[in-house]
Structures are given as structure tokens and as C-alpha cells.
Length: 166
Image (cartoon, rainbow, N blue to C red; front, side, top):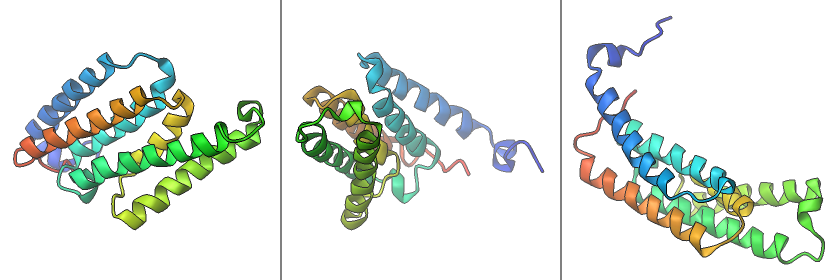
């Protein structure tokens, strides 16, 4: 069992360069994070950053799936927010079971919608929960859309220079 990837041993340059590109891109994101409660959204976008820079030639890194997946995550989170959190006459945050059910529905709905719209991007499922945890806001939605769009543009511009790191 080898500790280091054989591809890294042969050519470490893309591993280093693409990791530094991911660092620079994500640093920009973190500059705009205002609340700690957005940590789940940031984590989802961090996972998207990982995919774009470590697996740029996979289907999940494609702009349709990157942007579309996060749009679906936002839609799923919004539906669950308005129906379950705002729509119920009980304080859902006081009920662990109701809150867990709302998060589970958000994930399942995101999964279903991504599958039927061919926008599968696994990190975007967490966007639905992130929107619920951060509290629904236009700022959170705009943040996710802008960052997903930025990642898609960077991916498009650099795609021919990036390699799959596996």
C-alpha cells in the first residue's frame, strides 16, 4: 500500500497548482462570509471547489451540474423553509424530530430534483440544508449563485489546463 498517489509521484505540478487555485478561489469566498451560520453553505461550496479543481473533467464538474445542482439545492431549501419552518404553526426549531424531518425532506427533494433534471452535483444537496440553517435570505441565495457561477467561469477558462488528479 502506497501512501502517495502514483500520479503525484510522476507529475506533482498539477496537484500543487490546482490546489493553489482552489485555495485562491475559496479564499475569495471566505472574504464574503458574514455569518458563522452560513458554515453549511460554505462547506457545500468548498466541496464544489474540490470537485472543480481535482476532478475538472468529470460530469459533476460540468457547469450545468455545478450551477444547476446549487439552484436545485436552493429551491429545495426554499420549499422546505416556506412549507415547514414558516408554514407550520409550531416552532420547528424546538422539536428535534420536526427539524430532522425538514432537513431530511430537503435532502431527498434536492436529490430527486437533481436526478430528474440531470443536474446531479452531490455537494449541492447540502446547500438545501445550509439555506435552512442560515435562515432563508436573498443574500444567501445570491451568495450561492454568484459563487457557483464564479466556479463555472473559472472551470470554463482553465479547463484545458486542469487535469483530473486521480
